[in-house]
Length: 189
Image (cartoon, rainbow, N blue to C red; front, side, top):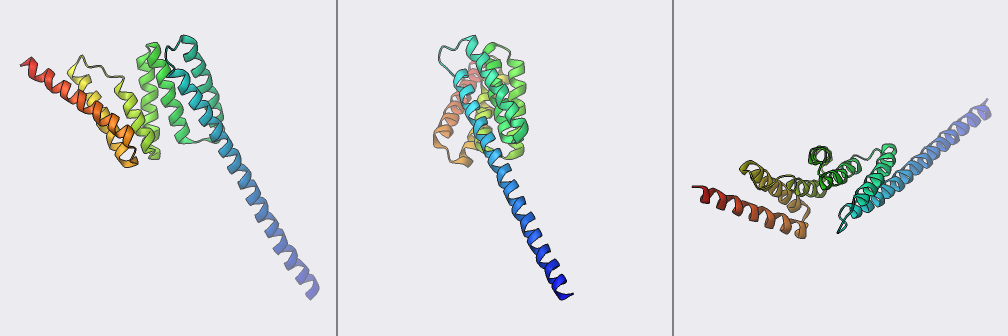
């Protein structure tokens, strides 16, 4: 009887240890698959951004960028990374803005900003605010005020990340448009 109880106890301990190691192997596999998916998404997003920001871009470049973004989106559907989803929306906004469809581009950018705010992705949020400033012109006082606010929000985000180059760019542009707005108000009177 003791031998049987001892055998059952040893069997249960080894069985639970085996299950635990299988769980660790499965979680390591899912983590490695997730990191590979994230790396693939990063590569596709970087390539899409390069096509969009290419000097002397052509319509084909914007189409290639959209194609790459679609692939990144399909990969991210499996990985379900919220920050990557926000980055996909962020880069999607640019080809639409460049092609003249600013309404659709701004919708993508707004979705991107909400994703970044929910996940506290500070650097990405600052970049998104900088991009949003491009959607506002300087012809109306309302748009000019929104443009200045975008640069202020971006500089707040970049201060948190200690990214001096982007912070300087946001502060410089914010100050420029703030002065432009002040001069416009003074000259109207």
